[in-house]
Length: 178
View 1 (cartoon, helix red, strand yellow):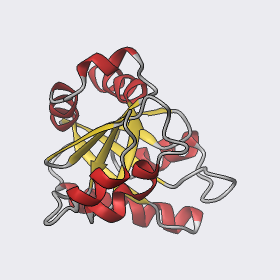
View 2 (cartoon, helix red, strand yellow):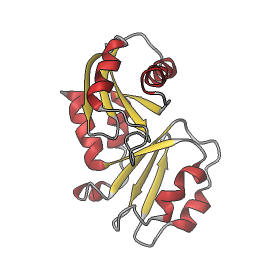
View 3 (cartoon, helix red, strand yellow):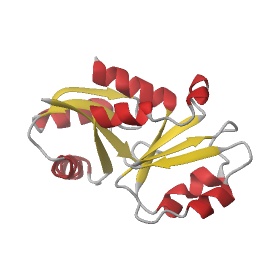
View 4 (spheres, one colour):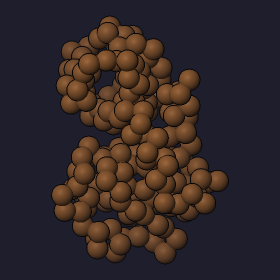
Protein backbone atom coordinates (compact mmCIF):
# COMPACT_ATOMS: atom_id res chain seq x y z
CA UNK A 1 0.00 0.00 0.00
CA UNK A 2 1.14 3.48 -0.83
CA UNK A 3 0.26 6.73 0.95
CA UNK A 4 -1.47 9.40 -1.13
CA UNK A 5 -2.60 12.95 -0.54
CA UNK A 6 -5.75 14.27 -2.22
CA UNK A 7 -5.99 18.06 -2.47
CA UNK A 8 -9.52 19.14 -3.34
CA UNK A 9 -10.03 22.47 -5.02
CA UNK A 10 -12.95 24.82 -4.52
CA UNK A 11 -14.95 22.91 -1.94
CA UNK A 12 -16.67 24.40 1.13
CA UNK A 13 -16.03 27.97 -0.03
CA UNK A 14 -18.77 30.51 0.54
CA UNK A 15 -21.44 27.86 0.95
CA UNK A 16 -20.75 26.36 -2.47
CA UNK A 17 -19.70 22.80 -3.27
CA UNK A 18 -20.32 21.73 0.31
CA UNK A 19 -18.55 18.50 1.14
CA UNK A 20 -18.35 17.62 4.85
CA UNK A 21 -15.06 15.94 5.73
CA UNK A 22 -16.71 13.08 7.67
CA UNK A 23 -18.85 12.30 4.66
CA UNK A 24 -15.88 12.56 2.33
CA UNK A 25 -13.85 10.17 4.48
CA UNK A 26 -16.73 7.66 4.46
CA UNK A 27 -17.12 8.05 0.70
CA UNK A 28 -13.42 7.34 0.13
CA UNK A 29 -13.50 4.35 2.44
CA UNK A 30 -16.45 3.10 0.39
CA UNK A 31 -14.19 3.25 -2.67
CA UNK A 32 -11.84 0.81 -0.96
CA UNK A 33 -9.27 3.36 0.22
CA UNK A 34 -7.66 2.72 3.60
CA UNK A 35 -6.64 4.77 6.65
CA UNK A 36 -8.51 7.84 5.37
CA UNK A 37 -7.75 10.99 7.39
CA UNK A 38 -8.79 14.58 6.65
CA UNK A 39 -7.37 17.94 7.67
CA UNK A 40 -9.54 21.08 7.78
CA UNK A 41 -12.61 21.77 5.67
CA UNK A 42 -10.75 22.89 2.55
CA UNK A 43 -10.28 19.33 1.36
CA UNK A 44 -7.02 17.77 2.40
CA UNK A 45 -7.15 14.00 2.60
CA UNK A 46 -4.47 11.42 3.32
CA UNK A 47 -5.16 7.76 2.56
CA UNK A 48 -3.59 4.51 1.51
CA UNK A 49 -4.30 2.57 -1.66
CA UNK A 50 -2.57 0.10 -3.88
CA UNK A 51 -2.35 -0.68 -7.54
CA UNK A 52 -4.12 2.35 -9.04
CA UNK A 53 -2.76 5.08 -11.27
CA UNK A 54 -3.02 8.67 -10.06
CA UNK A 55 -5.27 9.81 -12.94
CA UNK A 56 -7.53 6.80 -12.56
CA UNK A 57 -7.84 7.25 -8.82
CA UNK A 58 -8.50 10.98 -9.19
CA UNK A 59 -11.25 10.26 -11.75
CA UNK A 60 -12.78 7.66 -9.45
CA UNK A 61 -12.91 10.12 -6.53
CA UNK A 62 -14.35 12.96 -8.65
CA UNK A 63 -17.03 10.69 -10.08
CA UNK A 64 -18.02 9.39 -6.63
CA UNK A 65 -18.37 12.96 -5.30
CA UNK A 66 -20.49 13.92 -8.31
CA UNK A 67 -22.77 10.93 -7.80
CA UNK A 68 -23.26 11.60 -4.09
CA UNK A 69 -23.04 15.41 -3.85
CA UNK A 70 -23.99 16.67 -7.31
CA UNK A 71 -20.77 18.44 -8.26
CA UNK A 72 -17.42 17.28 -9.61
CA UNK A 73 -14.49 18.86 -7.78
CA UNK A 74 -10.96 19.08 -9.06
CA UNK A 75 -8.84 16.58 -7.15
CA UNK A 76 -5.07 16.75 -7.34
CA UNK A 77 -3.38 13.59 -6.09
CA UNK A 78 0.15 13.38 -4.80
CA UNK A 79 2.19 10.51 -3.51
CA UNK A 80 3.64 11.08 -0.05
CA UNK A 81 7.09 11.21 -1.69
CA UNK A 82 5.93 14.05 -3.96
CA UNK A 83 4.95 16.13 -0.93
CA UNK A 84 8.25 15.31 0.79
CA UNK A 85 10.18 16.46 -2.30
CA UNK A 86 8.14 19.66 -2.57
CA UNK A 87 8.84 20.50 1.06
CA UNK A 88 12.55 19.68 0.77
CA UNK A 89 12.86 21.82 -2.38
CA UNK A 90 11.39 24.93 -0.72
CA UNK A 91 13.55 27.77 -2.10
CA UNK A 92 12.59 30.07 0.80
CA UNK A 93 13.47 28.09 3.96
CA UNK A 94 13.81 31.28 6.01
CA UNK A 95 10.11 31.96 5.33
CA UNK A 96 9.06 28.75 7.10
CA UNK A 97 9.00 30.69 10.38
CA UNK A 98 5.97 32.60 8.99
CA UNK A 99 4.07 29.54 7.74
CA UNK A 100 0.91 31.41 6.71
CA UNK A 101 2.88 33.64 4.35
CA UNK A 102 4.62 30.85 2.46
CA UNK A 103 2.45 29.01 -0.07
CA UNK A 104 2.96 25.95 -2.21
CA UNK A 105 0.72 25.65 -5.25
CA UNK A 106 0.57 22.13 -6.58
CA UNK A 107 0.14 22.01 -10.35
CA UNK A 108 -1.83 19.37 -12.23
CA UNK A 109 1.17 18.98 -14.56
CA UNK A 110 4.44 20.69 -15.37
CA UNK A 111 3.62 23.82 -17.38
CA UNK A 112 4.72 23.77 -21.01
CA UNK A 113 5.18 27.52 -21.41
CA UNK A 114 4.68 29.51 -18.21
CA UNK A 115 4.68 33.30 -18.55
CA UNK A 116 7.50 33.98 -16.08
CA UNK A 117 7.83 37.60 -17.26
CA UNK A 118 4.13 38.11 -16.56
CA UNK A 119 4.55 36.64 -13.08
CA UNK A 120 7.53 38.93 -12.45
CA UNK A 121 5.56 41.98 -13.56
CA UNK A 122 2.80 41.29 -11.00
CA UNK A 123 5.01 40.59 -8.03
CA UNK A 124 5.25 43.16 -5.24
CA UNK A 125 8.70 44.17 -4.06
CA UNK A 126 8.17 42.09 -0.92
CA UNK A 127 7.05 38.94 -2.76
CA UNK A 128 9.20 36.12 -4.07
CA UNK A 129 8.28 33.15 -6.20
CA UNK A 130 9.84 30.10 -7.80
CA UNK A 131 8.50 27.48 -10.16
CA UNK A 132 10.03 24.02 -9.78
CA UNK A 133 8.43 21.25 -11.83
CA UNK A 134 4.86 20.79 -10.57
CA UNK A 135 5.13 23.24 -7.66
CA UNK A 136 4.85 27.03 -7.62
CA UNK A 137 6.29 28.53 -4.43
CA UNK A 138 5.12 31.94 -3.30
CA UNK A 139 6.41 33.86 -0.32
CA UNK A 140 3.99 36.74 0.27
CA UNK A 141 4.95 38.47 3.53
CA UNK A 142 2.03 40.91 3.18
CA UNK A 143 -0.46 38.03 2.65
CA UNK A 144 -2.07 36.70 -0.50
CA UNK A 145 -5.44 38.39 -0.06
CA UNK A 146 -4.38 41.46 -2.05
CA UNK A 147 -1.60 39.85 -4.05
CA UNK A 148 -2.05 40.31 -7.80
CA UNK A 149 0.58 37.62 -8.29
CA UNK A 150 -1.39 35.08 -6.24
CA UNK A 151 -4.64 36.02 -8.00
CA UNK A 152 -3.27 35.63 -11.53
CA UNK A 153 -0.58 32.99 -11.17
CA UNK A 154 -2.67 30.08 -12.46
CA UNK A 155 -3.55 31.88 -15.70
CA UNK A 156 0.07 32.86 -16.30
CA UNK A 157 1.44 29.43 -15.43
CA UNK A 158 -1.12 27.81 -17.71
CA UNK A 159 -2.21 24.71 -15.78
CA UNK A 160 -4.74 24.10 -12.99
CA UNK A 161 -3.29 24.34 -9.51
CA UNK A 162 -4.31 24.39 -5.88
CA UNK A 163 -2.45 26.10 -3.07
CA UNK A 164 -1.77 25.40 0.58
CA UNK A 165 0.22 27.44 3.06
CA UNK A 166 3.32 26.00 4.70
CA UNK A 167 1.50 25.33 7.96
CA UNK A 168 -1.16 23.26 6.18
CA UNK A 169 1.45 21.41 4.12
CA UNK A 170 3.25 20.51 7.35
CA UNK A 171 0.04 19.25 8.96
CA UNK A 172 -0.77 17.16 5.88
CA UNK A 173 2.73 15.67 5.96
CA UNK A 174 2.34 14.84 9.65
CA UNK A 175 -0.90 12.98 8.81
CA UNK A 176 0.85 11.15 5.99
CA UNK A 177 3.68 10.09 8.29
CA UNK A 178 1.42 9.12 11.17
